[in-house]
Image (cartoon, rainbow, N blue to C red; front, side, top):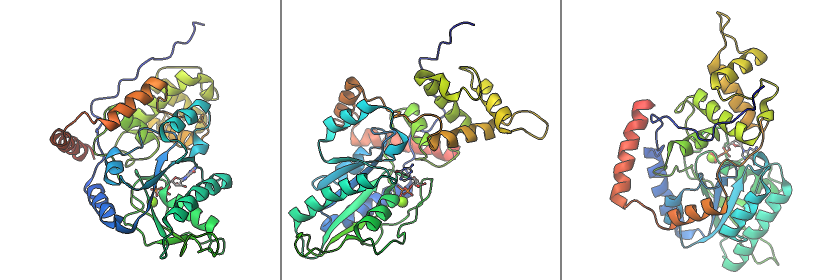
Length: 337
Ligand SMILES: Nc1nc2c(ncn2[C@@H]2O[C@H](COP(=O)(O)OP(=O)(O)O)[C@@H](O)[C@H]2O)c(=O)[nH]1
Ligand SMILES: [Mg+2]
């Protein structure tokens, strides 16, 4: 058999919207900025599978000037690239935590950093921290976990969580995650507030939107599952097509792949043909739970990180240009949503 040659590039269809910045994101951001007066620390969450693409530079700029800890969430789903950690540590130094909700040690290490800030702030009324980030990165889960860890007598979940964008709609009330300590010097304890996810105003390219959709950062269906499955096939082929060996031989054809999945997992239409839509959805949920490889999807080579750094520090678009782009893209979302 001829040697399998994976696709080297993926051309994202032009129809893919370049934004998901909605009215409630803009309003949410304004409210977050308003609530900042007594906030000393920002816990900025990003999905470890997309360490660069789930960063919202506009939100970061709006919150600048406070202590910040970058929390890379869901690190259990992106464990296979040891160099990713190093690249990110070079960007953020020790104000960074790789976190996952199952790993108590990660929560403890974050708690330690939070305490350090609390001691430095030494507020009598308690130090307040705000959890922020893009939709669905795990902000509410982080709040619940911090509370359970820091105040073990209170185990009830205080913030609602869910595997899609838009579960948290409002800034929460302060939740105590650390009791006041007589000797620790954290005043009246530490409080954390949950916030709704804020999407970045404008995404550079269709591929980034596809990646964000893969980690469920935008509404389901905005980009068809078949396109997401095709992109995943493209990435799996570059990593190692063995990942999906239980379904079929290596292939670049998404229809061939989805037909094999449909046959194997019983996603068959009434007439007997393969149900590609359901097969695609099955593949996505397998990947999302880590059963089709655990990878970081953003390019973290030195060049890519350098490029990202310049782009973040010197945004290409002027404010007005960005606004125009947003308007255009929003019209696109409306037309497609
Ligand atoms: N595997 C994994 N899933 C997580 C982790 N943190 C959160 N999740 C899941 O991600 C989804 C979104 O979480 P949620 O806290 O509602 O995100 P939010 O929109 O940022 O508040 C939920 O289904 C969580 O169970 C994690 O560390 N690992
Ligand atoms: Mg939430």
